[in-house]
Image (cartoon, rainbow, N blue to C red; front, side, top):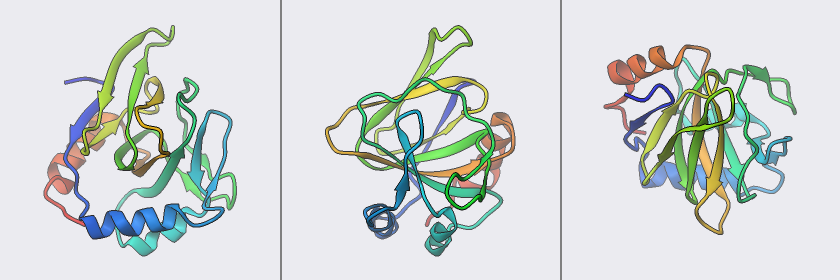
Length: 166
């Protein structure tokens, strides 16, 4: 198993994905950041999707062809100061397509994940990474964000989420 990512299946119905896209397409829904991927401005509004658990939910939007290489850290949302864990995330494409590329500390490529309409648990706090778009349309991702380690999130997914449907 890769230490950078772990593939997971899509757990969202077409109806739930449509709700996510409607939220994402509202004017001013995202706030830009310094590395080419915008975060959903009010993550607590995503609670209306009723995808509740021991995680914080977030949506990301990317319009640039390639985001900057970065390593995530737990932080507070830039707009309304909501705590946003970023040590490991479970990420699903909602619109558009792109690959997440992982790098070692010297920024040499070590792994790459393509989603193929499924999702992946990403070790966003453990490895440098960036995203390359594969389509012209913006890429929108829905994420469950965790404080926990990558290995703990994989175990949690296998024990509690893999059979869930939203």
